[in-house]
Length: 517
Image (tube, rainbow, N blue to C red; front, side, top):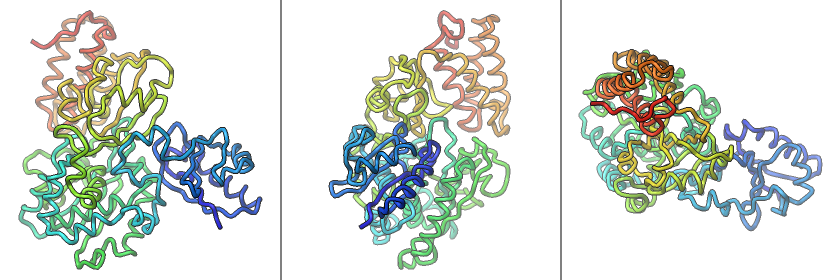
């Protein structure tokens, strides 16, 4: 009987040699006359342990890592195919503290199943949500999403059920479901991990959304920098169509729905929903003025549900287990779980799916293990390049949308980038403005010109030119960008700048940051 061995094909694992490790295991076992079934699964999200190799044993899956090609002969000699002891042995995978302390709902299958095996997906509660939805009226599906408390996971945190209700009620014989997988924020990788490790979950979530609002066509907008995710998702679409999960007759229900993937061109601004629609329609990615809202007049002028990938991937478990089950996780108005992504100068980088309510300190210290450099944490940026820089004094705040906002922060897509005490926060503030200047679509003046002037003003402050006056000017400029920009690109760029000024004035040569009059 073959022994099943799991070696991740996730981009993070491949980047540190997983493909070579898989080939080495196949070659070495063949040379020894040992029969193995090699499964290229997704990553469990413990990046510091990649390549993380797992072996299926009667006692469960046993993990070894990080495994190098040179380790393979010694692992086989030690009996790792039986789950025996070895210096790289981590024990039962599910008992690894980093994983055991999580609440994996959306990522329950990632790293567990063969990403392109629909039978494996179904054996792990896959399609249960879609089958439940097919037995419900559209309004019942929408009501379940409303009751669950699910909010957009892309950054805005708008209630998903309200958006679905608006599209459902909008007149029109053609409606669309669009998945925003243009994951461009620094320190984020949850969209990529799910597409590479559990693509059928997204397909199922989009199909449920289509049933709820009356759409027959969906689009997934994926960033060009994710070639592996693009390859896996297209292969999953082919499998889904052959199995009747997509097409003219979803699971024999008589309902039609299909998905077309679209590849972006590398523009950060296309993560903004209306710029993304422009790109899908074949035009330059520029922000549209609102109203009309995309839910009323969206893709090709039709009512459109636009949700982030993690939002849509959270839908199947809600329909499978019920709205109350999902709502029981979380805090306040932030219900369910969020896959937080630990990156930057952190010892244990990776994905942590937890219910809302844990603190930033718990995330960085208990899961991240502090900095990789061993130096003290000085700042953490949460929510991507437009997120605030949080000092250690704010590490006690619960990670919930409203609580975090009271400290001047935003959770966004859940990216968490850690900096130690060697970081120059004036340089980081300058980078925020420079990033906006480079990535602005150019449609509105506050963003296009304001960000360029912002770089110049910060340079003058750092150079010691009329620091107090220029600091006051920078505050005024940030207020103008916040209030006058057409979208969040220009409107939120001041957030990292102002937080750096507020918490780290000495880096700008200021004794105390000047607040606007």
